[in-house]
Image (cartoon, rainbow, N blue to C red):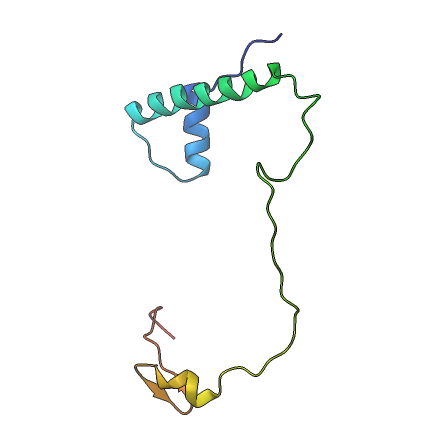
Length: 101
């Protein structure tokens, strides 16, 4: 069996930089320890014997009831706009979210 994978502080700093995260030295040390622990746990799963376990998509049986895809009449424009705080020309008026244009 090979040595369990671990993540050192240099790898944490590299991934943090890629993710544009600013971590101080204490956070880097904590993340290295925690991520190494997670990798160790995942590696321990390799020791499980699962040959007699039936593959499943869910841990418990579930049924997703689906309805027929039938086109139905939707809301009329005046019904949809009735609850809007502000409308103009048959459309919703919303606040500007980007300065400029």
